[in-house]
Figure 1 (cartoon, rainbow, N blue to C red):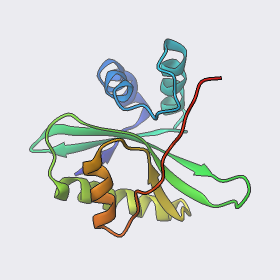
Figure 2 (cartoon, rainbow, N blue to C red; figure 1 turned 90 degrees about the horizontal axis):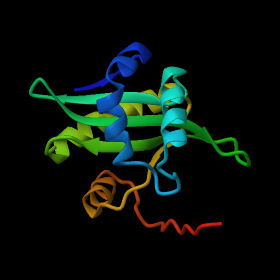
Figure 3 (cartoon, one colour; figure 1 turned 60 degrees about the vertical axis):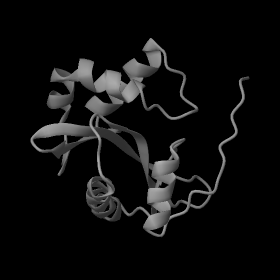
Figure 4 (tube, one colour; figure 1 turned 45 degrees about the vertical axis):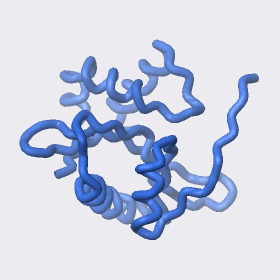
Length: 142
């Protein structure tokens, strides 16, 4: 079961939540204290949402999301900003969580759910439900 956390819950458990988010930052984010502080503030302002997947009465995963809008097309997408499994999750667990996020994305007028991953398992999961995992993110320092 996927549950959205409220800002006071995030604030109370920030040490655990923050360290989990750090393990799954998108590839273009530099992990430094300023970035983590900004992420914390975004969560408190609900610009970034935090969700926990509960499995057998324990936290199974922590996921953060944000609605992003493409400036040119004006299309909105739900970005899975971070996703980190604390315990082993089965494909059915991930699919259950994605179904709730799909409903949330629809309520936010999003056209798609997008994510960065370097895990072939997650790419295969996306493909198994009709998604694609074909693009390569190229990044270089400036």
